[in-house]
Amino acid sequence: MSSIEKDSALARSSAGQFQLISAAYESGDEEKIEMALYRVVAVRRMLRSGFLDLIENESDD
Image (cartoon, rainbow, N blue to C red):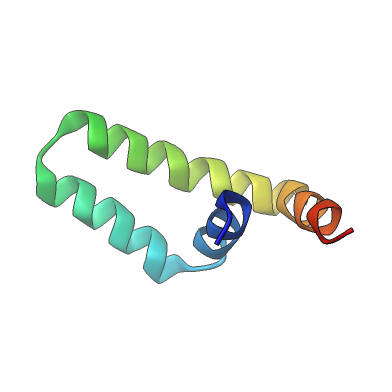
């Protein structure tokens, strides 16, 4: 699975987002927590703006 596909799957899965953030908090590592939060926010924004769909359509061609 490509990184685009992983980002798309994460953006569309509330459970996946929760799991990523939960695992980061369980680790207690501030950097992991920050990166998990950033990734969730980033993929949600890309999905909402239509950017993920644009990238997926480009990779299909």
